Length: 76
Image 1: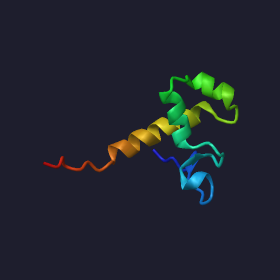
Image 2: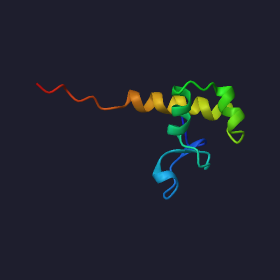
Image 3: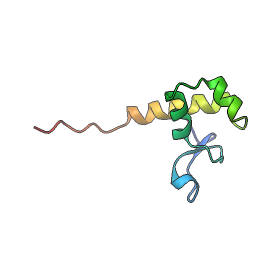
């Protein structure tokens, strides 16, 4: 899946973290709201500039990053 249509990094915006469609809302923001128990409908109500596809893309982006994360061996 290509995230370029919805997620990008812009120097100087939100510390270089991935933002959604050039907004000042980061992937981390959306994931944090979901982790705190907000539903997608609540997020969309509070942030009408977002689209449902933005939330789904954030989840897919996070899953992809986790899939490619480097696992270090446990130290003894």
